[in-house]
Amino acid sequence: MGMEAFLVFVVAAFLLSLLFVLLGMLLSHGRRKRTKVLTFECGQKPFEWRTLQFPVQYFPYLLIYVVYAVVAVLVLVSLFYVFEVPDALMRVTVFLAILAFSSIFASMNLKRLIQRI
Amino acid sequence: MPPQIIQEYARAAANFLKELPQPLRDFILFLHSDAFIKPIIFPGILFILTFVMFTIWFERKLLARVMVRLGPLHVGKYAGLLQLVADAVKLLSKELIVPEKAVKPLYVSMPVLCCALSMLTFAFLPLGPGWVIYPSDIGLLLVFVVLAVTPITILVAGWASRSKYSFIGMVRFAFQVFSYEVPFFLALASVTLAARSFNLERIVEAQAGFPFIIPAFLGFLVFLITAIAEVERVPFDIPTAEQELVSGWQTEYSGAYFALFYLAAYIKLDAVAILTALLFLGGWNGPSIPWLPGSVLGPFWLILKSLIVVSLVLLLRGVFPRVTLDKLLDIGWRFLVPLALLNLLVVAVLIQMGLL
Image (cartoon, chains in turn red, cyan):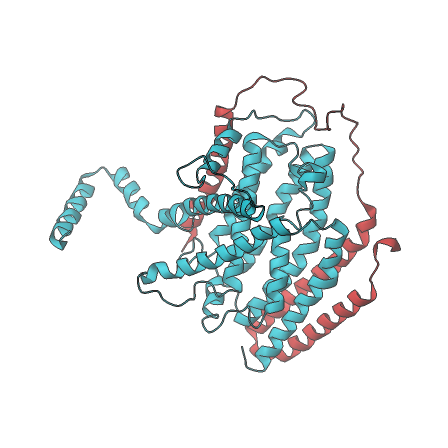
């Protein structure tokens, strides 16, 4: 049904964004200089670029959020279960209660995380 | 005008249309159909652009009032309304610079993708009964998917710039995405459980009696906080912190590319505000107004409610300082996720008791 309108919208959205870049190319002016294309570095000459700048101290948070992503998927599945079988609400309520209280318990007991690793 | 004359005009127009060559007639009929009006005019491009322009002007005026300034004043006849057009012309006339270290194809394509993808959110948001570009039974999930895909363009843009500031901003943004995505989804889930549907129109119809903010108040709080993190507004604008990171992942972008990212940020803000109004504030349900026709009433209430949400989010920028990244990560899993799960439990118990 709305497929045609959707396709028109997608094409229009991309065209509008491209139009901005084209207008920028048409309207922009200025001469190309070596100093303009240097990487931004607060007026200094650029240092060499290092790839490994990952903040390791936040790694435990990543683990926690991956676990919670699995929880979110479980919640989604149980939602579809309730939509299909309305009688299953009791079981899903118990499941949600377990999830809610265990997450509250975890957040109360793991107060300082960064220093653990 | 008397009705006879209108009928005559209509007949003349129909005759004129019959005499036109086939492709031209098809084109005129296409301009008249839903497939053109919906994506281009009302819930589509023109509406989005006007709403975004109004939002940016409103933000500058509001923040100026918070700081006891006047804000934009000179461009345009009333209160600097055309300031934004002047800014757009200025940004577009700036030189397009691609840094020599940047990965050029990615660096150039990501702003376009980011802007187009954030506009795509509006394809699934109904702005009134029947006023939706792509009606779908899983509309809410589709909105969530689009909102979850858009950050990837930003991550790639930050990486492709190959600058220290961009890279730090990009890493911060990645952690921010990690922390808000899960509670955002869990807050959505409570609404779908209350309405027993992922269809956004069905969710609004389920709020005919009372808006879902009443049974799911905790969910509303979690949703609002995560939505602010989603659109990178102050208190959670950690990745684009102007004062410490010179705009984080946007550092190397200038001219038209920067204009696209700027536009995308405000499109996302408006989309999230409309989503909040649809899910928690009752959508287009509202008391009828005598001088407004019924077909305008729904969009009127929805836009009014979303403007209230927008001004709330904008006001935070004038009031709150920025939180640090570890604090955001902490808030995410220690407060937002348990609150969202608790809210889901409350909604489930209310349904069990037959109150919802």
